[in-house]
Amino acid sequence: MSHAVRYQIFVSSTFTDLKEERSEVIQAIWELDCIPTGMEAFLATTESQWDVIKKVIDECDYYVLILGGRYGSVTKEGLSYTEQEYNYAKSISVPVLCFVHGDPDNIVASKTEGDQTNRHRLEKFRERVMNEHPIRKWTNAYELGGLVSRSLSRAIKVNPRPGWTRNTGVSNIELLEKINLLTTENSELKSKLATASESNPKTDIFESGENEINLIGSAYIYKKNEHQSNRKFIEWSAVASWDDIFKNVGPILLNEATETNFKEMLSRFIGWTKDFKISDNNIFSKYISQETFAETLIQFRALGLITKGTRKRPVTDKENYWALTDMGENYLVTLLAKRKKESQSDTSDLFS
Image (spheres, rainbow, N blue to C red):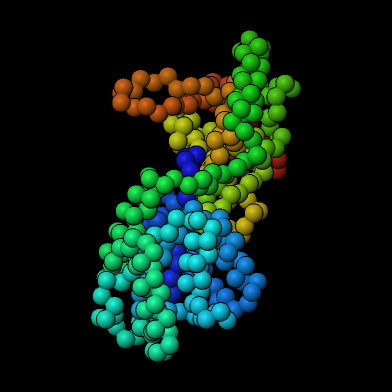
């Protein structure tokens, strides 16, 4: 997974009349590798719910306002939640990007305000927004998606925000120190590992076999009854033994595999997580943390089970390759080969 900053974008608009438009905007935000969020399905009717909305805006880097033909639900202060969100984003200095319908007189009646008071409120809000910010005008969902994409790209370039980076609780310095320590131990014990028994690659020096490791990763998931545009970013963890990991990763290393393939196999342990119910969700994409990958790689190298790939490849191939050692291949066979049942007749004489 990339460690680049991911920006969180709050999308503010009315909901029922702008479903298609919101879908295009949310997709455009995902394609920028940003995280869309909003309260479109949140029926905010109490003060505590408004507090939730404010907390969500507090965590966002940019605020996108979309105005169509409706003003929306009105609070006790006489403002729509959309206008109240806009006011709050401005008050905490979140960069605001505004997109207003370019031909409001031709919006279909079913997507416009039927209440005269709310129509007047919408006109005043629209006029205010156009006076306070540069605006982009749109007339259809596809056009709006493109405008949001280009505007956000520009905003991120000229006004970068703190953004979001995943915190694993382990600093890069601590990670490097750990890798260096393991590498040093590996070097010191290299001669011992070289003379270790091919039939029993385990040693008492390092964790191995049924000793367990906590795998850390991340993913984008969405509920099975929802569209993938509603996917959300989560972190996951799973506990597995070193033998469990080797049984799953080892086979792809028989003929050498890329580091990317190695990470992909590790990310499949998301199926072992207890952080969320797998059966209720679809997994859009999944990743293993760089820290977990480094720890696994060093451990298997320390155990003498894997080594760097040696096959010649085109100079344009910049991937790192890994392969099983002879010791690793023999150990994989002992883990995966089917054993005969104890009740089975002894046929060893056939092979003597």
